Length: 108
Image (cartoon, rainbow, N blue to C red; front, side, top):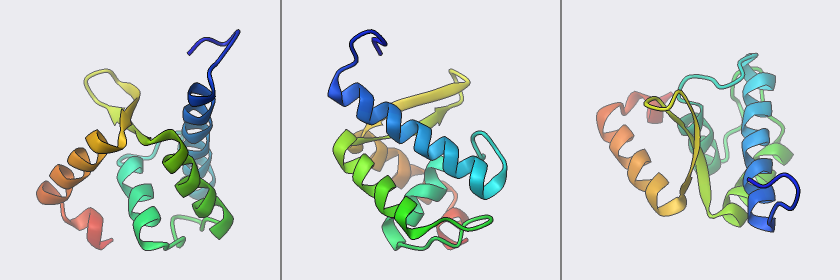
């Protein structure tokens, strides 16, 4: 991201990332909770906000809107030991693969 002249898309993606990190801190006191991207996605899909210490419904609505505006989602990339933005299309494939391998995330 160019910090001198960021594009609208870059700003939206950065805002989504910061929000995901803030929710992780607020709900679990963790900068990036293990499997955060999957836990938050489940909340977006189900509308459930009873995560960790609790998440305000307004945060869930904002998270969903930012995802839609960014047309993507942030993931933890183990191979890079960092967060990486992926398109919604790529994210849905990653999510489906994870649910096939670890369905307990979907049941928690």
